[in-house]
Amino acid sequence: MTVESLSQAQAVDSSDNDSVLPEASDTFVTTPYVEEVTGRALAYLRAGYPVHLAGPSGTGKTTMAFHLAALWGRPVTLIHGNDEFSVSDLIGTNDAGYRRSKVVDNFIHSVVRTEEEMRQMWVDNRLTTACRNGDTLIYDEFNRSRPEANNVLLSVMSEGILNLPGLRTAGEGYLDVGGDFRAIFTSNPEEYAGTHKTQDALADRMITIRLDPPDRDTEIKIVKSKSGLDEIEAGHIVDIIRELRGTGENKTRPTLRAGIAMGKILSTVSGQARFGDRLFHHICYDILSTESAKVLHDGQSVFRQWVDDVIKQVCPPSGVQPADGSDSSKVLEKAQSFWHQS
Ligand SMILES: Nc1ncnc2c1ncn2[C@@H]1O[C@H](COP(=O)(O)OP(=O)(O)O)[C@@H](O)[C@H]1O
Ligand SMILES: [Mg+2]
Image (cartoon, rainbow, N blue to C red; front, side):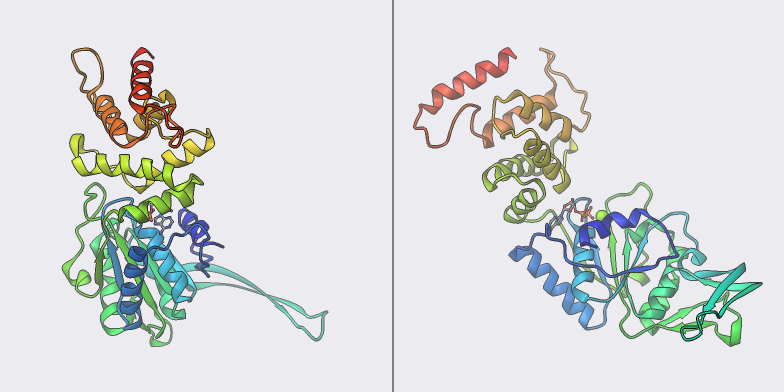
């Protein structure tokens, strides 16, 4: 399983199959920026600290968490923050369970014994399994869960003990956390809807690395890797995104995902990022639109006008081949008139 497909697996909320062994993805991009963050995070993990990747959406937090877990090399347990989680969703519960087990004797093949019992049974949930096995816990968007549920992590992170108040067997009310256990958290503090403020006590026990949109070089390499476009075309797309992100007008803050989507679509239609190319302009409107309904006097949308200006600023005009030696101002004129007619 690749890191990429692993990240898809978060959607499957099955507590039966708790851990997976991650592998590096071949579309994962490493640049000096990525290496620097990775190096720091691994140092914190090595020193025994939980790592917390915090930052706005689309800055590569989840991808980095999987990458770190893959480098760490232990089986991974995934939890995705959820407002409806209670403590028992994290640690487990006392269930009236029905257990059926089959005993197969390897030496006498005719021996197959089936045991059946009905009794109160403790069922581990993911956090308990991870602590018991010394796995790596990835708790993605942990601030979507309520602080009351996450409080159970406090003693895990400070004393290496997981309290299991519901577990009554043989005086076990707690579990010693395996020495290899590590936790990697992600959160998006800026996304207020559906999130809870990170508790200070919890934040104090992890080392927070703040992730912002990566540098231009990293962003271009990511768009290139995910879309198959060449570096020059990926560069145009990234420059449009970064220009829009930088001005912050209309609260437009397109993320890495927007650039990847533009790249994938352009690659699918074998298109190019050109000023005056109608299809390209429309792809940009559709992907970058923030539903700003503001319209100018002539009926033109403010947002579209603004996107057109940015495309004009960073992309070559439609019809221009970089090395054909043509008079680019003429071609630009042609492209503009084409654009305004259509
Ligand atoms: N180093 C990287 N290499 C390749 N793709 C990346 C890398 N970092 C981020 N991405 C891609 O960027 C997009 C956003 O990353 P993601 O980790 O989901 O962000 P976040 O969790 O911060 O919202 C995803 O499609 C992801 O595959
Ligand atoms: Mg994420």
